[in-house]
Image (cartoon, rainbow, N blue to C red; front, side):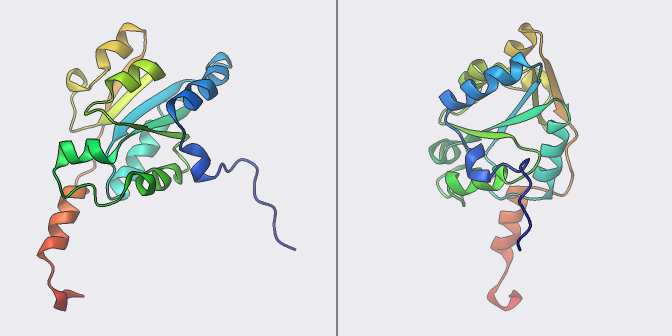
Amino acid sequence: MSPERPSSIKPAREKVVPLGALLAELEPLRAAGRRVVFTNGCFDILHPGHILYMEDARNCGDLLVVGLNSDDSVRRLKGPTRPLNPQEDRAVQLAGLASVDYVVYFTEDTPLDLIRAVKPDVLVKGGDWTVENIVGADFVMAGGGKVHSLPFRQGYSTTGLIEKIRTLKAEDF
């Protein structure tokens, strides 16, 4: 007999939602007093720094929404060789984290329109961003929300991983 799967585990693919569905799901949660935390990024190669960051972000409220740059958005921001992983794969990896409640794509260069639609109670970015430089900070604070720049985890970087891989030779494998 196989053990029952706990009902509290939501499958990763069900956490990746279009904006309209996200807003519909958030409405009753907000009505019940749940505080929505929002963060965003490319998350091209998921590493321990990202995982710890998501846990820290989630601890700023009751549920975490991650805005994920679309493939076209990543190319415009990072160059023609990025992303390494397509948006569907990046989304499922993020959604597979226990700390992440929802993942939603955005196609623009910044998540400002998405932030305005979601209206998070808390907006967070990594410590490489100062609060005054976080896109959407003014909007969130004007609505009574909070904005946090979470501690940056040294030694973890997607760009650093890519550079390390580039320097490897066949005999290194």
